[in-house]
Length: 384
Ligand code: PMP
Ligand code: GLN
Image (cartoon, rainbow, N blue to C red):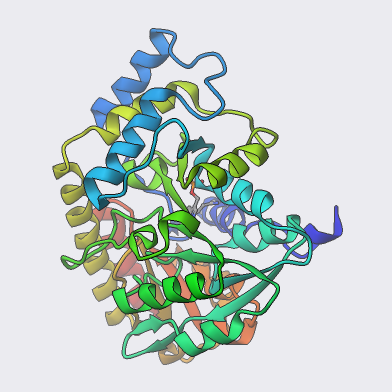
């Protein structure tokens, strides 16, 4: 194994899902819904397959129907106009978008400032690009993980090439505030940095809040690569349909890397996702309300079981602190949780360079059927 990858081992998601299967535990680890997306969209995929749309290599940038639908979505929801031909790129999930963007935009030795805890593929892709990650740690205060704007500013050096942002944020469930995003934008403009922003949970923002795309802030559209995912938005994580929106030069760069990663993927599913993006916006409202109710169910169960629960303002994850349970090592806790309670969760420390800072935090996914969440909650009461 190449030295830049050796430190990463097996992704925690594979490891924990295997543990759940082996121990017959409820899997609140890996974030995937246990209910598939809309029936009519599954039917659209079947139709595409049957009608021979996408069964052979689709066009490199993505099928025109989907690029149009992505551009229309950005315009309709956020007032961001992107040219479907030159400013939209379809990828094999957000995962490939992240990889292609980082491989395309980074040179060996460049620094990338990323929020810590960070989604695991960020660190691996930065390493594969030969660049260096510079984490800025989100720290909890008053029930929420916050970005310290002075720390962010101090992390930028002459070698910083880009800021890698994620909002709503996995694993903390934090949604960056307008003030935090404005400060990120100001810094990017002032230091002339590129920004890659992972907004795959854009439709999972709770309590009436709205998602604020970084590209809508002053000076940002021209320097920002925005990443979205049908896996998250329509509950089809296995289809691996994601996308990038950015100005032409940046899309073209990302495409240069993408063409040698997968070239293309998910032909028939691209047509189905184009139809999903054209569903009425009530779909988003219902999806969000449904997930918010699940969040509330799991949050109150975790609180009753003795965890400190941080507010999940977005995503489908809740981060907890296990110290009130008399525990301090999230890895050990998660390793034993199947035996103690028949539940699998993710130790947030895997998303930290500073393992000590991440040690007491554990992430639970709530994108599961209500009866599954009820059962998990009742099992977790054994810990109290
Ligand atoms: N970014 C974040 C923050 C995620 O949580 C995930 C999914 N789990 C991804 C990217 C990857 O998305 P996809 O499944 O579309 O590749
Ligand atoms: N994004 C999902 C999570 O955070 C998992 C994706 C994956 O398995 N790579 O749980």
